[in-house]
Image (tube, rainbow, N blue to C red; front, side, top):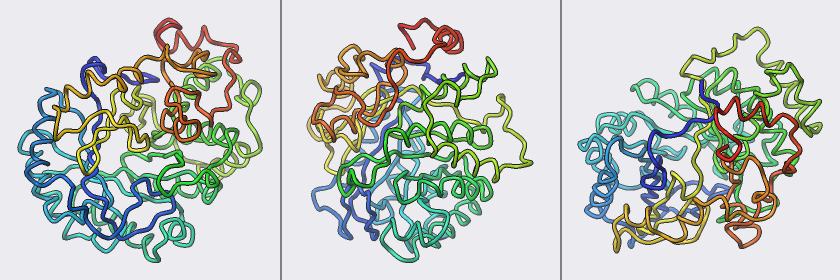
Length: 402
């Protein structure tokens, strides 16, 4: 199994993943909301006709088509969401949808999504209990709506990804969320690492040392469930480091700087997994990280058609109402600079893992105002890992390409 997956095409030419913010309308008021959602639809959002034109632009990247996700706000707040999904599906480009945990997340709407051609949805779960989740989502009942929607999605045959935002509110609840995801069943558990933009504030972040602890916890958890990270690009470094240490039979605590948070998370995970079989490396359920980053294999399109490297990086590369999406992706100076790891600054520029990681450009910009600055929530000191030769062998490439 590849430790770090790469698309089979040139990411300078085409993205692997495209997310379209179909609306900002949503009936939740989440603490971290990037979109600062409100209950009302923006009249300047792309119309149905413009949405179909956008789908056509995505299709023109060619086959295999980029993964295409319709998000929000809450996509169910758009009356034409089922028609948009159907239009994409008719072009052999089935869209994934990311609805919110509200009363709109019901069996009727989920069946309509399935009938329109959707195959996958993602739901957000930020606590293993209603008390934790609903406090984060700021609407009582969201936890129950999410779990009921989860069961309904499974009953109509939709695959699920469960998204969890890691904050100080749920740091030590992560092992319990892991158990809930594993027990109820999901294709992937996606852990999002907070970016202080929109309603997200830096005070809700955990420390760089705790991020390191969480990523090592996730490596342990990945032996039981498929998972990935969003805006946590240094998880790819951790995967390579841990694999190299395991090959030598060295406990991670002997080499990596891991604090008491990791000890506590690891202990809780061991309690939750006692007696469970490991997921075999050859089993497709176990996901490995994908080698993409902001502007490099990934772009975000706002409800008004603006193109950004990420939904959390408010630097505009163009607008699909004015310029073909393919032209924006390939030729935007902003996106080209993000794909050039030699332009990274600070510790990221010095790091031997920069070719596979690159840090969160969104978090770098949010904290420093410089999109190429070092990742501010990474605790790793470049050059400190003693087994880089092992890493290069595991990655199947030379150090200049890692």
